[in-house]
Length: 268
Ligand code: KIV
Ligand code: NA
Image 1 (cartoon, protein in one colour):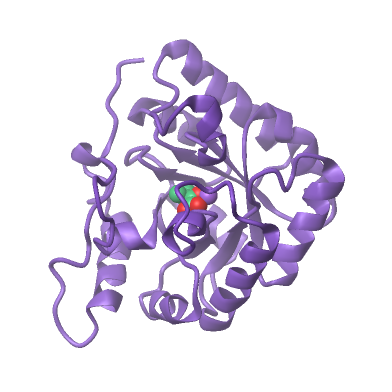
Image 2: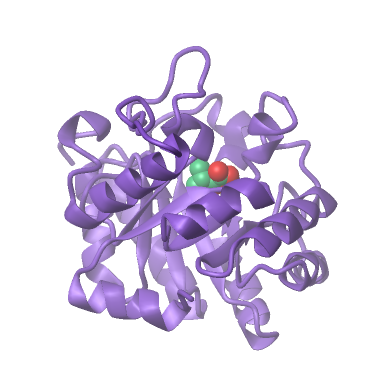
């Protein structure tokens, strides 16, 4: 069983850890066999499972349902569940939403934002809920960004990112997740803070990597993001999906994924 203290140990000793999104018991079991370190029940299920074109329609009840299913299928990984769009806008809402997904089997919750989440992080920690804060490209804010775009592309935007990380870590966030930021920005965050940093489209210097399961199995129809690699296409044998998960885990451990072509190299 992977615990938060295990991930902290991994960070301290420089062992990179794997994370995949998962929404059901069968895939959760396959990830257990492959020894994936952490599982994210992502609100990306709004797209991958429900067929919406954003994460906005997802409810806390949806998140709890999928968290229960994943929990039953996997006894190895640390399980993180997203709190969906507008389910943590006030402290009472955040507490109620976190309660629902934690009682469904999550061991950590993830929320999107920056320094303004400090009170939320602090109150959840006091209630026994470890929080991961997702920064950079935060898909729940797609309508504010005007699309899915790389973030923290200038020195001042990267400094703002660092200040946001500082505020939430200070408030007790136990993990950070960076999506679509320049390699250098993620490297600075990883070096500055003691908590594990997971990246997606954030380069090789993060402590862990995450991908949406469907993306890494090559089940993305249409244009896929720069950071995606298909781990299924080279697999053979009895159970190619389990092999794809194993191959991803190994590539993250060894630092062969992400490669430079999966990252955003922008001079800050
Ligand atoms: O919902 C999700 O899948 C996520 C990852 C892309 C980090 O938040
Ligand atoms: Na998400």
